[in-house]
Length: 210
Image (cartoon, rainbow, N blue to C red; front, side, top):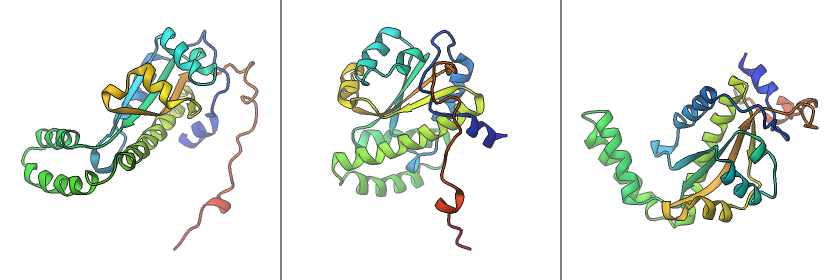
């Protein structure tokens, strides 16, 4: 049951480097990220799937030495658009129009209105909007990993400027937002592995308005 898998998952504090995540399952997690819904279908982020050990060592140094980055087998870095512009929005229109013949007129009208809103805002506001879409994708990734029983560790604990420099993101018009390690938990070495999952009870965080 899906909820049982969510109870099984936790943010692994220690990964077993001898047990890499299954590549077929990682591919499914990446596909879940690609299928994530985003505001107006813009998909304003890029995903880096990093297996290279040397590169992960550099990113570990920019992550306050967190060992999961190198003990896990895959590091996923989510990088959001640094801003919206005509070209990025036009590319979405062209793609949708090609995939859905006969919709060009409606698409042009909708995205023209969107441009009038987004392109009048400053870059930081647009980056923050794009970054919020990243977190939707992160949620899909975490749920997919749980369903597939792939251990994961979401991370904000890194220096974004260093990540951006190491990955050459500025030249790509991107900024790093969040990372996700995939691998296999080291049950013996992880102090958190045996502890009960703790969440607020529903009555404290859910209000039904009927």
